[in-house]
Length: 198
Length: 198
Ligand SMILES: [Zn+2]
Ligand SMILES: [Zn+2]
View (tube, chains in turn cyan, green):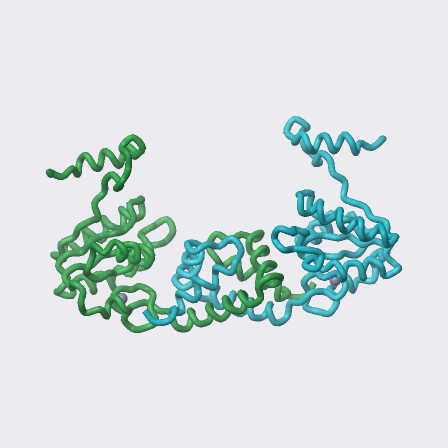
């Protein structure tokens, strides 16, 4: 056998995708070459285009093709509020709720020391610079409620509070529409502790 | 919003991969752009190379970069035997058993009328031409033992037998190393009917 064939190289390249093992990589390569060469062509071009044009917003760190993203360029938002999310997808979810009219900062991850993801990897210096611009009054932490997200929220909260920034966290509690019987005990316990007067 | 951004186009393009929904496509795009731009570049180039250089072997129909693949070019094999598989992966499995020294024909699929996969899609004309070269004496059907594979084997068997070609099928039976207690009843029934004198 000489060096890897184009087919073998393609199968190897698919292994770069998250969660794709050798069997899936092979299936993807076979499928595209056998049934969807137009799709393969589109994917090749889309990858090349994205690599060359997608970068991080100077202000909020999300993916964008400009220096500053569309949302950060929107002058109609409340500059005193800054919401912190782990991913652009989380940011979009919050936008869809129509409950938040401030700006965002996207960490592009969450603290996970065991995986080598520390403050540097979640762009902590950029966040501090953004949050201490003198205009931001409150930072809303919207990281996930799993272990990494909670640790990330705790760390950022401590670092911002010593700098005099007010920090809040999305409320935990019973999901809207849920029947108590089917909600886990931890969630009910938290909802009890955080109960609000009506 | 203007036309789709490079990021959105990339997410759409990942949908061409089998079994990839919108969430997975987004996760793949984010992952490559955030953590593995070299991998994205490799995948882009590998796709373009494979599209331009991978084609089907003139003789056995498998993927190759030449007119005739390496295995078909091997003069040491037994030209009287032709083994039919559904995929190049199945072909490789049989090669690894070291029990077969003939040539192959790869259908690149199996009959599935409900999915629009008929004789044309499994390259039936090419197979007939290959099997009736006057040198092939026996065709070994190594399609899968699921419904589509069995139907494909049955169809090909009928079409080759009327053309005077001897046709055989891989034996069904109890897997090597299996304890009878844990083998399904259908397999045991088949092994009983196909029992061999010792
Ligand atoms: Zn931005
Ligand atoms: Zn061949």
